Image (cartoon, rainbow, N blue to C red):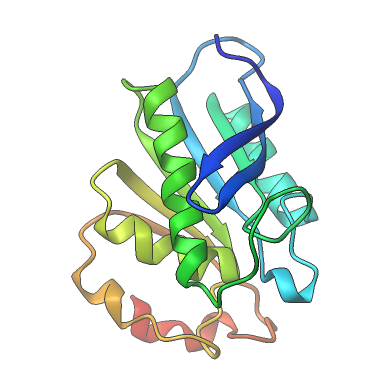
Length: 172
């Protein structure tokens, strides 16, 4: 087992603040990177949806890593409209792959975290599956998903302000 708790992950701009949690039972069935909503609207790794998603994945036997994007909490750097945040996702994946080399990686993102994470996850061979919570289909372009051959679970509310479940049709 690796150290659980608060840690800092090296990133191109310095470091990313993160929380790593091992499953209680000790049997690791995989690993998951869980990403938060838009930093300029209060999104952090402590967001209640991100916390609950990570807890559910952890209960299912996955090691979970939540990280703060650049400029959030104790992470260095500044918000970069999704461009630099993709680097942050890759830094989190590098950390997980280096420390849990034999485990499949699930990438889970909420809102902005889903948008940034899905784009990285579609192209990154280390990702086995994707989870998108509150996919902001009204705010961002998701055409890159047309070529995705990985399983994606969409969790979408009926009255999501950035795209209710009825508007995610083009993603399916």
